[in-house]
Image 1 (cartoon, rainbow, N blue to C red):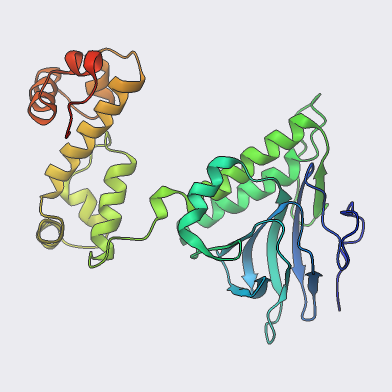
Image 2 (cartoon, rainbow, N blue to C red):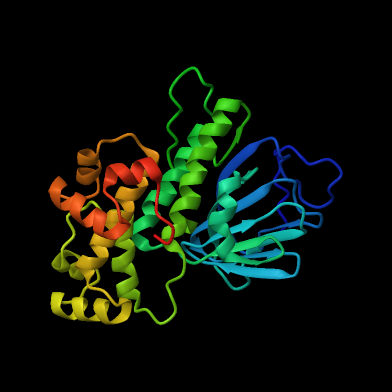
Length: 306
């Protein structure tokens, strides 16, 4: 069975299954049985984002193929022949999808996952994040129907599986939800770990980098990666060349430097926002790291080589 996306506005002159024109944002949620498939020999004028919740899907873009399972984000760029459907042998394919024009910032987030010919396949979303990704898609489905005069309507599961955002406000609001999806699944925090570094060490470093001002301790970081504090501290120091608390201090100093460069916060507030309990201690370690106190750093910017 070939599905023709019946009811969607067609791109003029494109044989095969229709695709929405580039000016629209269209979002939907499908749970399709074996035999479902879409074929677009000329591709589409818009980007296609798919995120699988259950079952298995197969997507192709030019000569590149991808299999999609639960938690996989697969993105197809415009202008390349593509198709997709339930993977042969799978019982079904449940997935969210969205056609739109990608915001420029999304391309840098997706670039590490480029498999060729305009296909981007992001590794499975961690279980802890999947609920938030699905909630963003559900919000996008509601936001696409916003009239701009009242609150966006709530969308219960199974109701109105496809929505088209016609108005400017509805399109932008829907794109904000999709941007959350892209960032959660393909953002910088999920770039591949450095070669040879234990995945638990990488997760701990990512936790530090994501929120350096948090009250991290060796024990709390070790619990996050299911290691004893002594084993974690030894593994972290051996693989990264500095202790977990030294890595935390470096992350806090980098965060403080960014705040000094981009905000007008006082040095005391920068210290507090970066996790330093004492402004005096912050001034001392900042000078040691950057060669000048916070005020002089803000006035002159970073020194060459820092």
